[in-house]
Amino acid sequence: MPGPNKRMMADIAPGSDNPLNFAVTRRDQQTIDMVAAAIRHKQVLLAYQPVMQARDQSKIAFYEGLIRVLDETGRVIPASAFMDAIESSELGRQLDTLALAKGLRALNDNPELRLSINMSARSIGYQPWNQMLDRWLKRNELIGERLVLEITESSAMLVPELVVDFMDRLQMQGICFAMDDFGAGYTALRHFKEFCFDVIKIDGQFIQGIANDPDNRAMTAALVGIAKHFDMLTVAEFVESQEDADVLVSLGVDCLQGYHFAAATTRPAWLRDNRIRQAV
Image (cartoon, rainbow, N blue to C red; front, side, top):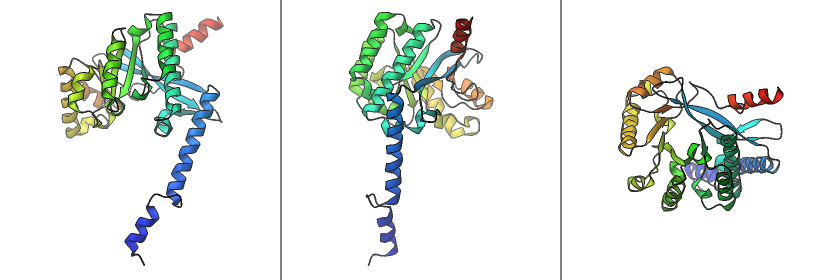
């Protein structure tokens, strides 16, 4: 008869008869079904969060467009609630394409707007995504100069050679690239030299509470130093207090993003203004 430790391990080991494993699988399937329904019924939208200039925090450098879906009750569901479950699937590619389409339309309709859109490296070879980008660039070639494509550090490392080639081609059309979650621990420095990102977004784990965390100040200073060496713009994510913002400015960060300035909204100022004009 197994001892108590062996019985415990058997209880938590993966398997179809494990209640915890069953609950996680069921939850993931419900999430997948929700996203699939939202895509099918076109219940997908972007929420826009401003990225502020660090030296003049009243000025917006650009916006980030964050994908959202609506569930069956009409609630707005953020990407953090579903992306892990669908990121590597066809649904992830479809969401990337929809996010790109909505972002490009916003850029086309608002000539003063500069916008970043998230994508997975898995979408680089996805034909509908590429067709969507080509269609809008042919329609309005000036869009590319105001578009920033964000790729997470972990995603970029899945296929680094493919990402490098992809960036080389699109940067020729004026499109900028940002590495999201920089410092999360995935990037091999030998690949980092080849990527040539235009923007580095420092992972929020180093930013939250940085004013009271000397270790994170040292880490952020090092990441800023790397970015500046390669002539990359730096953005600090998850800035939640003025105290943290002041420290980040002193460390040489170029832009700041977080709840201290504004939450992401599905009704940004330019959409509200357009509706007012249309009503008049």
